[in-house]
Length: 395
Image (cartoon, rainbow, N blue to C red; front, side, top):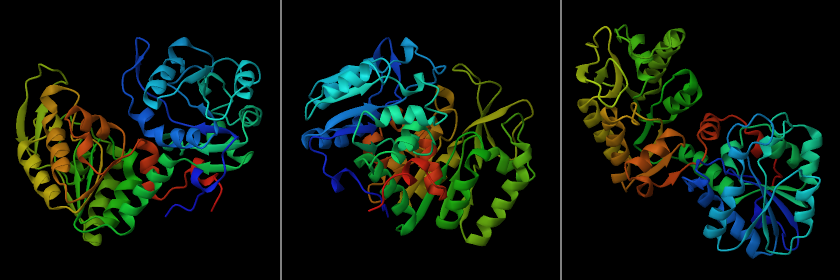
């Protein structure tokens, strides 16, 4: 349960409200290529503007070298946001204590202003107190609605919250609610689905799912460390050799917890990752030397779909293979469509590549909830403290 105050718990009329959003979106040729994260922030921005706040938005974009760089400017986002919001969004470029300060102090109730990329200043990632103070000087209230960066201890996520009354936005509150409730009292059967490249990236979430799920389906590159832990050969497939013992321990933990951990029984293998790659379907005990597993096979896909169809609660984080490349997309497509078809289950997607897969296969609107933050989502599920959330005022 979320115990933090939200924008609904405070009076915002006539107040300058600094809102940390996550507008780290792809921009191609000066145009926003995917507005999902922008749309996700609309309820909070609308709420504040409709309640006569003076809304100041701040975000990072990409990884600039701690200095202004036109290719990482947030200015192109203003047009997209203005269209989606139905009201003008003014861009306040420049330094916070000069041009931006003048623009924000001239705001009227209901106005919306966008600051320049926070990461143009090295003080953002280092949580420099002076940079945090400059941000705080622009506003009376701080709102964090950037779930995707809530696990970062930065000036705009923690530093400002220590200087102003600080509350959660509607998106952040919803993310926390969904990501905690699904594990608190899940309707059974609870099926977890994990993929992606590395076991080491997901140790915490694997252990959490083993303690909570009835079935844990594992695909993607991380499956090969588990397969190697069973003493099987994996050819040239991705394996984290230093994590094989840990994988073996997790297989034992699954037995102890009564969680049925299902690994691929067949795989799509090839010598290279390419659109014209020659592929073969082999059993998991038959991966040839010189070839690597790049997707789950059709028998595994059918097995996973069957388990997903029976579920009443689903948590999915990570693709089943290199779904961005045609010959290796089928397994992830099967999982995405199976999750989407099960309209009796509560289905929560843990951000990252799983979201991209849902979009690619037209299933984004067929699930219960899609998280906007991959890293933050995993940390929250693991039970870790999110600095950006922890810094907010309690109810």
